[in-house]
Amino acid sequence: MDSLSQHLEGLKLVGNKDQVEVEEEILKSLNMVLQAVTGDQQLSGNLLQASGIFTSLGQILTSHPRCAVPAAQVLAELAKNEELKQPCIDAGLVSALLPHLKSSDQDLLLHAGRAIGRICYGNKELQEELIEAGVISLLIKILTDFPESEPLVRVDLLALCNLADLDAAKEALSKTKAAEELVKQLRRAENQERLEIIIEILQLLAENDSLKVQLVEADVQSALMEILEQVQDSSEVEAAGILKTISDLVISLLLGDESMQKLFANGTGLIYQKISDWLMSSNVQMQLTGALAVANFARNDSNCVKMVQLGIVHQLLDLLEKHVDNGDVTVQHAALSALRNLAIPVINKVQMLEEGVVKRIQMLLRSEMPPVQFKLLGTLRMLIDGQGETAEMLGQDPALLNRLVQWCEDKDNVGVQGEANRLLASLMRYSKSQDVVKAIQEAQGLKHLVSMTTSEHAIMQNEALRALAMASSINLEIIKDAFKESKLISNLQKVLEDEMTSPDVKYKSLGLLCSLLGSGDLKRQVEEANVEDTLENLCNDTNANVVRQAIIALQILKSKTHESDLFFP
Image 1 (cartoon, one colour):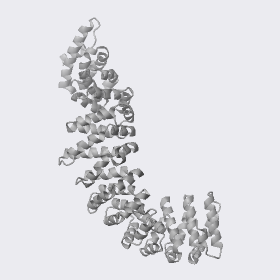
Image 2 (tube, rainbow, N blue to C red; image 1 turned 180 degrees about the horizontal axis):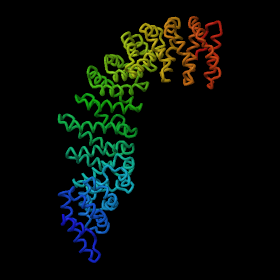
Image 3 (cartoon, rainbow, N blue to C red; image 1 turned 90 degrees about the vertical axis):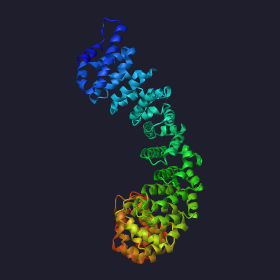
Image 4 (cartoon, rainbow, N blue to C red; image 1 turned 120 degrees about the vertical axis):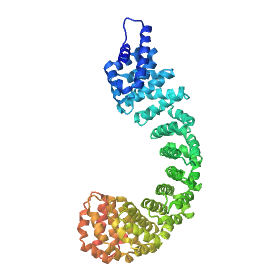
């Protein structure tokens, strides 16, 4: 301990000696201090803080370049001790170390990098200051200049990994050749630790849209595919972890619009070319990646059309059929999201319907998984949007209607309940068929559409109102009793009197009311409920369309004829 104290004193600059002699003493003392702290950090900790070593090291780093390497090495060892990080910060040692990252001396770069990394680890404020001081460009330059120096590259990558989750770091990285250099390192990675560090950095970079594009332009996708080929059939636990992280990274790259389009490349991109293999793979992770990739590519209508032409739909359905009974819910959810997106363009609806997609989806309705049921219903609803013949066919399918009504009554799964209601409304609205109206009535579905008029979601209210208006315009007589029993008039009155109801919903409610007044029985129910007062109040509404429709409804209500269809909007 006495010897250590002597060498700590030796680090303090001596004024009456020449520079060479001073630096020789400093080097000797640094070597002895390094041996001491390497051997027993905790025992010498208090002594180190009391000795003024941090101030001395700062002066050495600033004024004695010849001593910089051992000084940085001592600091790197000291910074392993959590209690000694703050004294390093207080002495301004990070600022003293930073200029040394411009050095061409690999030993100095290594120890300075380690020291900075350890001192700043977990300190967001200090990391932000480092980024502002330009550390990112220095780290990328080191990767560029010394790509094959394993210890130096490792320190550099760890530093980037610690910084890359900060927005300021991502912004700074986007102005460098980080993507290009990291892809090179990804190709060079020869062990799992190195691979995991690089992929973690890439995942952080892929949170930034500009960096997503840069990574794609640096051809990160081909490097990732090469690694996937090596690990996807391995049974090792480590391989499964790498497979998962690469899959996540691929999907992150697809979340950006520009990067996604570059990867699609009109159906010729490497990622898209791999999707068929992934969907047919026996590996669930690869199946999931394939389905999610399709779902993301399908955010663009032209991509959707191209993919349907290339036959992706039936591959997705094949995958779903593998999982429908006790299968992986996540895979099913992803595949159905993809199908739903693919069904958005009208031209795709027609082709998918011609290829029998609806029947295959119906077979999947036996699933007992609510997330899957939710997506199935949404996909069917998207497919029949504007497709009258299909809506008429499905709207007369007793098994489907009974299943929908069952879900409409499932209060434990609100999402499924809502989608079932919306599909019922779509079947009625787009079929424009009296036979469908009868079938839905016989399946006890009308009451659910009536309840839907008071939904807390305006879009669902509008869908219900349009469907009921269509039904009443087709043949009001066959459904008037169902409307009376389900208290449709009461619901409409509540909607019209609610100040939170949107003008659009009020307008459609008034239109439906006008249609209902074509039935003498329903008109008497309207009179008994004193809806006339409600209409009088709406004549003073702030919305001109609502006022106009309220006046029309009043005129019908007070008239002795039943020509309400003339007034229906």
